[in-house]
Length: 439
Image (tube, rainbow, N blue to C red; front, side, top):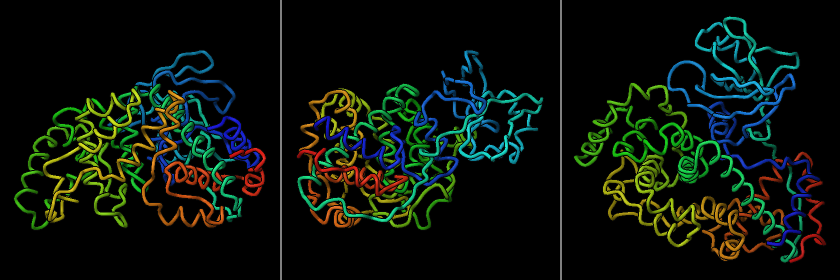
């Protein structure tokens, strides 16, 4: 991809009032769990400025707290050069500190940093039960999941111009994802970053946040142990309900094995169990059901010798083969814990999901670390384009876009996101000058 075209696309983003921030790990509706997951994945970075103007660096993000009390404990923060050790609390609104009773709760006395997305116009102070002031930071709303939906406007009907724009958008998408990977790896380490990236990809559109939370809360080391599958299903909340009605012997045996491993860990992990409301089950293809995707995550976590070296070294065929080889004796014949046995075995990760992981997890690392990987990326074929992309192609490019190549699909997805988030979408489109996008 030519550097001038990518630079031209980024100038158009600036003209439209877009923030050139690093990519968030998930696209999810705003919610406290989603924001906490973004923070812990490093999407907001580890540096900032407190509301009273002091620079700070989070040198250690600590641990996500399993017990009552602040969200993250054992953190290390340096504020204006002074090192502080303690807890970090993250709320949607600065006033939630008082609303939730943290100000009078001794369990929050060692909080050293209070993060939030919104604050009242009048100055609001965060204080502990011993009336110590806690440093505050207003997080950038651009990463909070808020978005606008501006009206569509035709960009061009020239196929070469459309192709150049979307290639530049696809490269911008890769660069954002690589920057997000670098930040997550710096914060949590490559093993945790890799598991989280796969988890988000398995969550696909509607369950990215709960899958990210699941990967973060269980962790790569615990997920790789023989009890990892039980931990993942337990923390997901899928072992809380009674045995499915009329479950056959295979289901009962499988659940019994999981429960025998989970019950010894449940008390320790009780605060981390995801509520049923965190998951979306409606409107999904049967093969995309969260039960089956958690099983796939468990197998990937247990079989890192196959896919993780290939991911980190940029070996495309080896990585894809490892994904396609993922198997499970129970889940190859089931879509959910309550479903009947399938008439014939089905791959745990189908071809489309493996391709999606290749495009959104493998190639951002590969291209970010070696420019030569752009050429095979540009040759990848995409899955069948969904109705959303076909409609967008017609609305913005008059149907001039060939949606068979994966790069065109990825570019159009990024274009839609950037157009949606523009403060001035008309200026964004005007700045996509064909003279700057040589085919």
